[in-house]
Amino acid sequence: MSGFDNFNTDFYQSSYSVDDQNQAGYGYTNAETPYNKQYGQYDYSQPMGYPSPGMMQPQQPYTGQIFQPTQTYTPSSSQSMYSSSFDDEPPLLEELGINFDHIWQKTLTVLHPMKVADGSIMNETDLAGPMVFCLAFGATLLLSGKIQFGYVYGISAIGCLGMYCLLNLMSMTGVSFGCVSSVLGYCLLPMILLSSFGVLFSLQGMMGIILTAAIIGWCSFSASKIFISALAMDGQQLLVAYPCALLYGVFALISVF
Image (cartoon, rainbow, N blue to C red; front, side, top):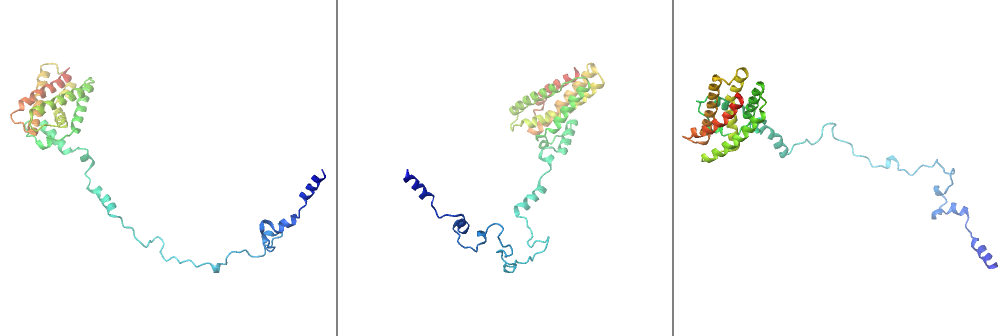
């Protein structure tokens, strides 16, 4: 037991003191260092270690001009070509395939059956005019109390498909489905006149039958004339006019009844 007391006595005997901590804290032994001074004993009158303004290197003076850069901007060749490409682009209606001059010429060709059709114009795929004429035909039927828009578009699609197959079998050059739809749509214009007449008068009498037969012959003759000139099918106009008359006869039945 006496040995344990001696061990504790030897353990607590040390030469460490608080004053030694202030003088040699963290290994610094210089007593003149301001960090070794206690709080409230720091001499604030001594200047800090910042460099004087005269020791700093002078900056280069700005020689440029405000709002006037020394180097002008020159666009690259790709940017100049991109900006000038807008001037070379065609109009939007021409990109969409809508040409009012050709639409007017096709309309005049349909309205004047004896006029020679221009094959280069008639061979174009123009669906702007046919869509307008189909809407006009359905609108005139609506004025007479007949809501037949579904029948108009359905019969038009079936008729165009049948004429497309028939003309590809009869012609040597062939024809596109868009061209067939364009020609049949433009030749629907006389049928609009028939449905407009049916708004004011009845078409179920003798006068209506004669007018309906004349309108069917007008539409089929104009369509066959355009197909013959566009596809170079000389001597086959009657063969082309017969299926066209059947197609426009269905539209005439919708207008009469």
